[in-house]
Image 1 (cartoon, one colour):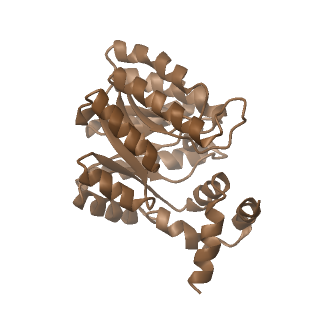
Image 2 (image 1 turned 90 degrees about the horizontal axis):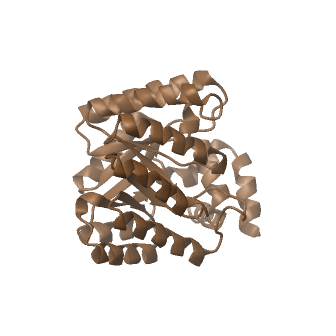
Length: 303
């Protein structure tokens, strides 16, 4: 209860205050910051996925601005020779305002990435967006087979069926690439699993299905138990290295990340950046109130 109260109050504090706990998890406010962070990861044999922060926009003008920001990001990333791809949230491009305009914007971004033989990952947002984002992915996948992938959230009860339904693309020669994560949005119990053990069980069920069907999977977790179980499934299905990688958020569980890399697995780190970091940070806080205690301790410890 204490954590939830603190988590609900903190977003109303000044941005400089919130930045105290946000900074370790965000590459910075500028593209230059993100490029520098990405270069450091690449030096350590770690790939990146870059994300310009900003979602649930209110105007289509914002959507167009976000599009040009991504087009610039793609050019700069490849000019710097980075080993990375890109993640984007469809609501940043007007998904809930005009889905056709959203498709036009994202198609242009995917086409730009494809011109460099690059890759765009479509993030999965909260449940009102799920069908819309799967529909968007389907349209783009048939035009850009090797340049677009989708995020899947294990805590939604519908997820395994969604993965099954998408296998028709695989059978038609459009190889599937998923990022499998637990899920971060607060969803009704009627459509989502809530218990830790339940979510983990379905995460592994989804992962096993993907491995069995030779889908490419980004195993996105900071849970040591899931990492260990994923490694067992990799061995069980003799999954080649080109069909999987582990993925983690910037600033989270660096020791576990290092151990995974030392064990010879591919690793990709999600590198978020941009001036719209405040919404990202406060949303993370609301979704994980336990962070509040650590924030308060850190503030007092730092003096």
